[in-house]
Image (cartoon, rainbow, N blue to C red; front, side):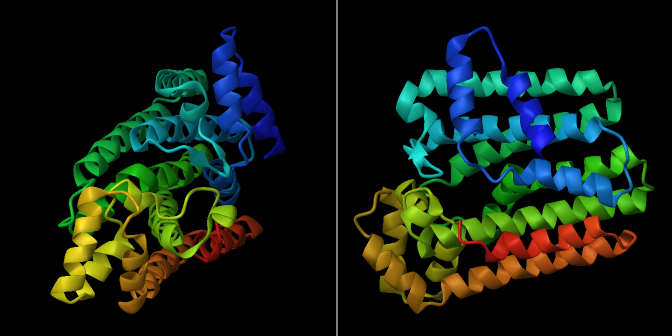
Length: 309
């Protein structure tokens, strides 16, 4: 990871000062680096012994970071990882354009690896992420969003990049299709678990721990799983309050929403769903030979759902 961090900062460099400022702000903002870490460990679990996984890990982080810059503009967020967002500091235009720079830099790094298979996987992945952004936009303010529609957004916005990170470890090692698909399924299910757990934390944590404002999803009109389950389990009057909160956004009804979520057991039900995905991710690892790296991937499945931020 130290080598990846060094590579990230080397490849961030631009003679445009604003790019350096905005990119360093978000790259150096204390993120988990979970996606590049997943790729590094997956490559080792697959038996890869080269160095190309370092470049792939760095460009995967660039793809992820570019989506964060764009997300914060779309969501009008002013806090991420306990710090002001780039758009709050430099404005929406700078955030969007530096996000584009990170996307294009990641594709430059892909080309350097000279692997059509790698480029196809990552090109397809970034396209799916863009679809997920648009799908989520369609769901905002929609109180009748179905659970499957919510899961479709998670798959595209979060899980596909996890799956690409782990699949590419298998691709580098030249694993047979069955084991490659198993590592990809691990990443996909881990992505589901991670995002559902994140959506639970939005209603169960605090700003100091979580690094963003509590209730941000509600303020943005996002119908996440805790709300979807609470609506389904609520009496009509209570469900109407929840639906109205999603439609209007804002935090005026936050206390009523929190009370309904707790009364219906929606947080526990959502956590259980996240744990089921984490269990499925661990099961997928059975296709790989035993190793310390495979054990580390199993530990990350636990971390994804038991973390506090």
